[in-house]
Amino acid sequence: MITTKKSYLSIGVALLFFTAQAQETKVSIGGRIEGLGNREIRLLDADMKTIGTFQSVQDSFRYETKLNTTDQRFYGIHVPSLGDLGPSMKRPAIHFLVSSTNTVIHAKLTNGSLEEEKIIGSPAMTAFTETYDNLPSTKLLKNSSEAYNRAFDAYNNQAQTEENKLWLKREGQKIDSIYDIQRKEVAEKISKNPNAMVYAMIASQYFAPRNNAAELKEFLGQFGPKVLQQSYYLKQMQQSLAQLGKIEIGKKAPDFALTSDRAATVKLSDYKGKYVLLDFWASWCGPCRKEMPHVKAAFENFKHKNFTVLAVSIDKDTEAWTKALTEEKMPFPQVIDSKDDQSAGKRYMVEAIPTNFLIDPSGVIIARNLRGAELEKYLKTILN
Image 1 (tube, rainbow, N blue to C red):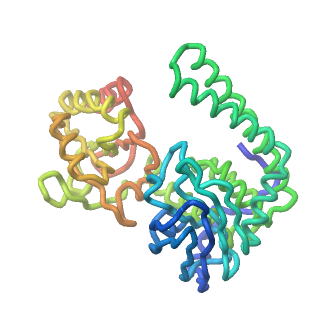
Image 2: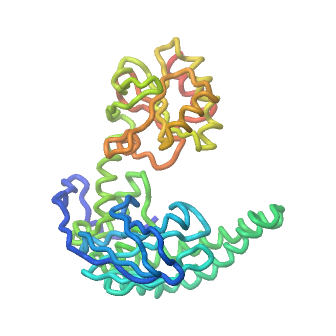
Image 3: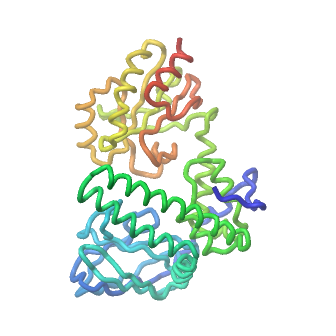
């Protein structure tokens, strides 16, 4: 946890002075990726959504559009033919900051990955890269990451022996300890430069807490008012902090309307007057499927005591969702989350699953993330 002596952020004051639309500037994103040939490229925004699609021609590309050049958000170029976005040993995308009207990207396509990228024409990207690379801990982290990758390969691709498992665990612990050192280094830099965008960027990318109001408040409290109003990521965190305040225990559960497995519109408020376990899950989530027997048992044991479950799937693939419903045979209401900004997942700040909220008959959140035997035990205390 990053701690500082001085706090610049007053949560009691309105945080969102920055809601005015960010100004965008016409820019050119171009360059050359050696070995790319003629392929589709997608320009991505900070949320990894596609802004536009274009083609490389004999390794080269150029695309013009309007982007924000002042709030230091990361954009990206993604080559879909190299793989999907997400955890992978391959790199199908390059991420960069845009702070001028002409950004040039040079890289190489090596063994299916975009490597050795160099970003030209973006002072913000240069400052970010140089500042991070010059932290004393970064070299340690690079060396440790290489050792971790060797251990990861040995365990996952060669032999899942106890020896390799312990090796992988040791290397992971080394990386964690170096990150702790780096976190302290960056905190010290911020305490001396609370309005420096470059340290706001480094901290927000590597050390920002998630979905914990107290930790978020402390993290944001390090920064000065200028950077709090300018930084894209710090503004996002302030919005998250405000939203977290709406889903704390003791708050009214935000309502939503979603489509059920029977093609009907279902609202959370339809169940007012009952205890409701609002359960977020997905067909592809192993821990969710493992937890489901406990949820079904709770429903069967307490359904006659003014209790129900409303399961919200965050699946993007409707067929995978309906297949999982058939396999799991869940006897309680099922809905699938929407894909827009009004989704239940966004309202409830769901970033990991399984996640659940227990809501009382008046519509107030009274517990969160009750799992396994703990769910049964808690329901007995309030329903028996």
